[in-house]
Image 1 (cartoon, rainbow, N blue to C red):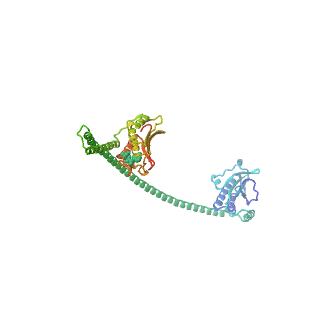
Image 2 (tube, rainbow, N blue to C red):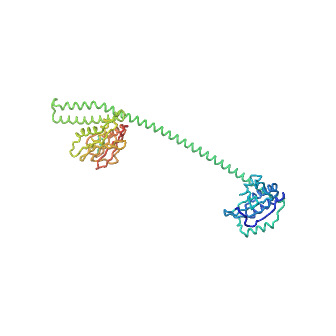
Image 3 (spheres, rainbow, N blue to C red):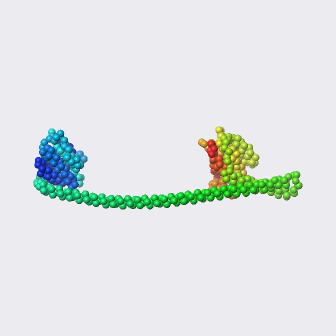
Length: 453
Ligand code: ADP
């Protein structure tokens, strides 16, 4: 928007006396209206002009004022007013008396035009205004040339009008602000109410959760108490049963002893039946006692760093006596070294013996295999057999007390071995899992932390 004006000015006028200030103001507003500035902008540019005109009249005795329309580099038209002072500005500088003047227009400043300096102000014409073609500008030039400036009184009246309009606008804006404020307060009240409601609901929920927790605590305490009394009952009953059952076995042995009076064949058979039933009963009583002990937490593992190899060796030896079927092979693999593990050797032996015993009991042909593998910080001890296998839906049930797979071959037993083995494994800090499918054998896996629980 800089550079020499290419077109003739829309209007020119001289500012020499006080009265001219009114005229400059009035003409400024007219030109602004003619090129299409909005009402507010017309008042702004007229006000800025009268302020600058007053400064220049008092400062340097006046100026020649010219109005132009330029095409700006932004593709938009700009109304430009040049005020060429009659005497040079002191130091070629100009500062408006009122600092607010510069804010009324887009640009206000001193510009060098040839060897002279002019005070220049400009304001952008809105896009919505009528296009300022060469013809339109010529028309405006002619119109402005024809119209005669009004008197100072006219200008005062016009200014009054503008002031009233401005006051009106301020009032309506203030009213709008009041309405907005009211709405804002209303919204605030709503938000506060919602917040209150939410916190109340939250508190309510919290109270519910606390009550639920208390109930849960109470239920688990009851459960614990029930489980303890069950264990106590089992322990007492089995303990009380053990002495008479042992006595029956002893008496049976005495009766069958060759040193005693000889028995008839039938009597001998009946005594044999009594002895085998009593020894089944003793097994059951002993297992019940073991399980009750494990459940009541009265078994304290004796932790020690052990070597798996002798443990496996002993199992190989003792279970060979149980593996009586020639069609079933017992394979106890050599554990990979170093085969060290922190655990209770006796309890671990019981768990593995139990699993191997089951394998040998239920497998009719093939093999039962014990294998140890190390994975990171754990030992996986697996007992795999080629027996009948167990349906997936029973994988957890076989760990329940007294549960025996229905329809399976009956080979004695109490249904307490697996729950006991799982209980002991847990005491050793590990877990016992089963993978199996009917007809494809079973694999029981004992997972133990190498460093102990
Ligand atoms: P028990 O062997 O004294 O019956 P357990 O608790 O050791 O009791 O086992 C529960 C049941 O799980 C067994 O009765 C049997 O039906 C099933 N079971 C256990 N081990 C095996 C196995 N290796 N193969 C097939 N079935 C098994």
